Length: 89
Length: 193
View 1 (tube, each protein chain N blue to C red):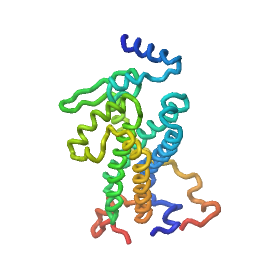
View 2 (cartoon, helix red, strand yellow):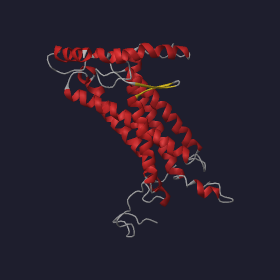
View 3 (cartoon, rainbow over the protein chains, first blue to last red):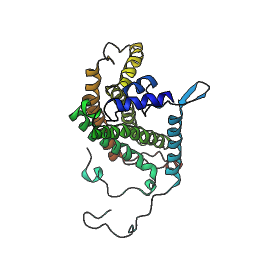
View 4 (cartoon, rainbow over the protein chains, first blue to last red):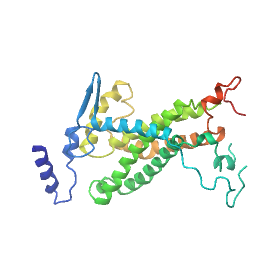
């Protein structure tokens, strides 16, 4: 609640340009992408990672698996020679 | 070197029909976006990218292009490692790729230092201890904005651009590495020509 009030004051203090308050990033550290948000950390033994970072990591595994599983679409005229230019050998 | 036909091939082997082979190009596309948005940011400066709506937008493009670059570069690394892409005389390609990875990290780090906000100040004040600890603090002063900004907009783009050129030429020269199964057959070592 207090952080939201600070953010609102910071936003309107500059005449409504809605520039993100520079204080937010500095206080919250390099992990905060969005001004005014607090990164939530996941602890697992020695590993401490933000939820956002964990989501990105999971997304990478999903995309990699999908890239392996899915096949590129077949070219419609794969059998016909290319139009113009050199003939493919 | 590399002939024009090899530089821009019209056909690729059947085994490359997979989305996995797109990650390198997606990484390159992200780099192109980075250079374009970065040039715009450099032309107008921090007084623009912190204040105007368009400046914020271009700044965001630059930031998200970095995220895309690392996202696809790591996927490209996973793919090439799993298919042992250094086979068949492609060791130099792998080494250049590793250098690209490290160079990208340096470029990203100097970029985070170049934001000219309290976030970048925090990064500089915290990061200087690590740089000092490895003994290069006398040469790279994270609190020296001019040095960090110059490295980010002048030195690293040239280094990375040069390495990418070498990397792509090496890939085109040797061709895409065949599947591991082809090398398992007796007498096969994946080496070409």
